Length: 268
Image (cartoon, rainbow, N blue to C red; front, side, top):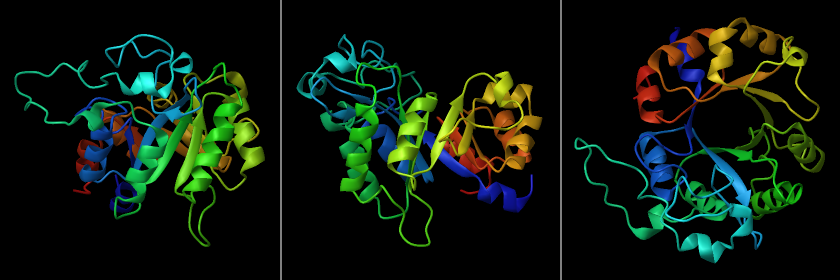
């Protein structure tokens, strides 16, 4: 891979540095920032009382010591749960020293505060999870929160520090209609016939193919570029996959291992 190409690829920490700390916790995002990640990826869901929290699954069973759907729980109930102890640590790992805040449920507001106070430019890739009982309220609350932090529109002459991602074309259409200056990423798990030539759904400006698509159809990156789209690939952890993405010239690599990827790209 060329030196220029290596340094032009954005490294995005998937759910934080989730290889080294429990996903979607403050600990994982602090680690990602310390490791030098260019951007942080998070999933957002709406609680029963209208708060946006960073949780991937519809239910909290896998990643906490509690049970139930995020959409049916209030923030106070979620705050009482431990989102860190589910991680099993091997004997080779140092015993993690995290206070309660760092493994509590993470609100989007707290994550935005962390990014704002980081002392450098750290971008955000925020995924809206669908289907959900709250439908369009997720996008509405998300844009309101971004506006509070002045992140709903880029400064003059600068690229937006935030982009919204989703597997739901409808979600991205809502974002594009309400906030045209916020970039949108259409996530893809499979390469359907209607997408093969590089077209994306209305309201989507950036392609977000999974690594399986890139391995099976490496020529797809060129088609997407030919149609004028950037390519942000998830979830890229294996060194051979990092190499392939770099050779194909993708614009962003979303990874659980930001420090390892940065090192492989010659940026540490």
